[in-house]
Length: 238
Picture (cartoon, one colour):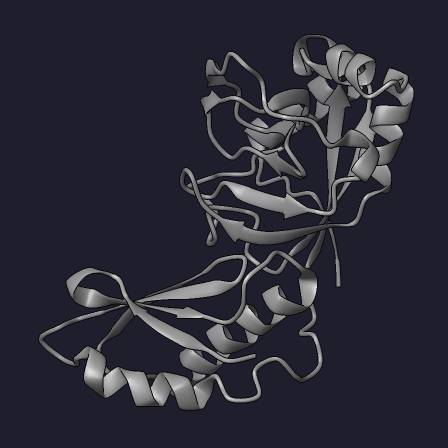
């Protein structure tokens, strides 16, 4: 693993660790993210981990790329080795199909599966949050079954509901906010993926793991009501 530094405007650097999307490479990105946080480098404003690289932004009145570059390369040494850090594993309830998942039947038809098989495959997957992007808190989930891979919709929707479980290409996602999307809608969680009242407003973070569990419409209404009245979170496993 040979890190590569690239400029990102006047106050940013990108550290590339590889070329591809796979768990080991993503683990290395998160190790580097932790090393940078622990180093407490003067002038560093934020780090943003992605599939295979990490964006670092800095205050140009405090530091400069030529000062950061050797330090970052040193921190990246051996980052591809080591134990995987403990991750939070969220178990998120989802009501599949119907008004909550308009594309479930279409996904089943196009993959030559029954709707029950599509739901079963989603609930059996152990998803990894590879990165956040596209919109605030939007978690890209790797681990979608090969049997479910489909191109995105030809006609994107201008608005999809918050909490939608969706899939596009070889990935899945659960949306924190209402947003436009060309991904296939399969279901919806009644719990809040985004809540400003929480200490961490966006529930999912890079490196987290996600499992989905199917619920019916009655349970959806009950949990949605409870989520409105309290800070109800999904089950979390170490």
